[in-house]
Image 1 (spheres, helix red, strand yellow):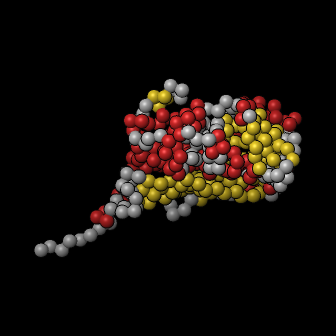
Image 2 (cartoon, rainbow, N blue to C red):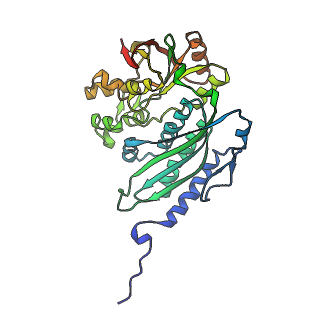
Image 3 (tube, rainbow, N blue to C red):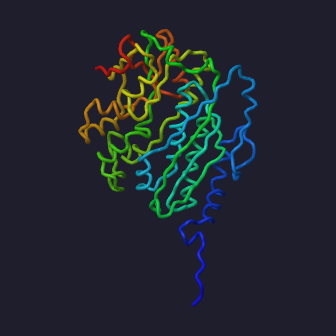
Length: 347
């Protein structure tokens, strides 16, 4: 009886598939290159030349990390993987922009049950798309195959970014004062938060996700998978105009009630007028089919507002005009008053 020889493939890890994935993703990574990137894909680390920071008076590095969460379940069901990478990038770089910085580079981590090179390349394409939108270089990443730990056809996706800003250009909550106006920048939909509730409200099967919904003007799955909007260039446009942003809040998990107070100093309270803009149909559909109370909606979702800025009342029109010129929809949604730190949602 011949002796059986084991190898890594027999344990569930396909090294050759890993090599194939790297080859397929190279074309996407190349699109994100910046002059500061040193070397190419395939090394043990990503290298980025920081000598340009020496021209800054007082450079500060900013970092952010996040994932896509259970929104990935929809990608699995619909077998559509080319947009979740944009979500991953957006969740990280929007936080950098929110602090007043610009992202420099990005790294991704993909954990999968089985490495399917074409699927991995599709995910990385989305990551590269997001990096191009944000002006960040994709300088490295990791694809880890976890047989026996994860289902073969599933994966998890997370990212990490580093950005930079001048110290005196950081957006500091101490500058937010009573009388400031709140400007909301429109979201592209649900973005990447609250999908555990979404999956309880809508049956998660291909037939339901593929059904056309008239009020959405598209299939339900298309609406839910719409990637998170990236606001880096829009906020840079405001900086380039010399407009002073007193406070900035990225509306992610926790909605208005948790995120807006994060940009407030003690003694300042935000008042949001929910009739000041039109809530997108996807949120109305969610609320109706799930019988979700108003407070829970505003405590879970962005409700059509992906970023909230606190600015001087006299700058509000210039802010909105600049954002519109940058391709964003923006509108005054409320103001800042004296009071206990927090958020009020008014009619």
